[in-house]
Image 1 (spheres, helix red, strand yellow):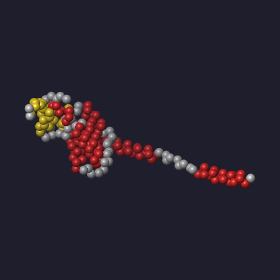
Image 2 (cartoon, one colour):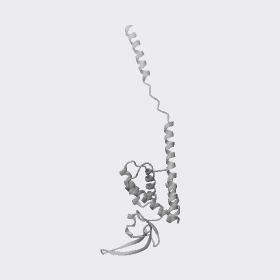
Image 3 (tube, rainbow, N blue to C red):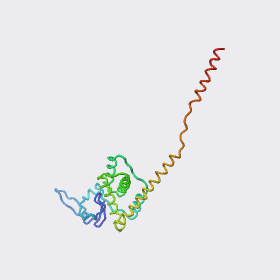
Image 4 (tube, one colour):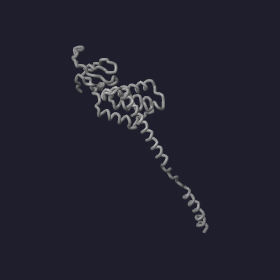
Length: 207
């Protein structure tokens, strides 16, 4: 993927940055092109090899249309709920590394939902904060609104998501309660016929 000076890009786990220049450097006899990114959150500069853009997940910031899709996903009531800590942490770590804002959306939903019922480990709490921070910073830049207003909208979307999930669980429980119990098999009648047949058999032998 090619970027131009001034492009707003997302560098996984660093957040939103701006391409400030593109230059070539010769290192150990090899000439390589580099993007100079200014990371918005902390005003640091990061160099990314042009040839390594796809491997590190560098991408353009989302569009206005994609922002609406993001908020739809945040509030859709669908939440990944891994009970096993190791499996959950690995899945969420893999999603954070992709740099996809939609993957970060999944992480944010699942960990925020989990935090309502139990205390998160330090590593998961840090991951939750990171996912929320990256989403808020990117969307606020795209929509040209303050991070505080975007965070409020994110929180509202998450609350709608949890309400939808709770309602879906209540409906499932109601259906399960209303389902008729399976009929019990009755094996007594054949036994009664067998008992009744024995006197008739003795009568036949007596005659």
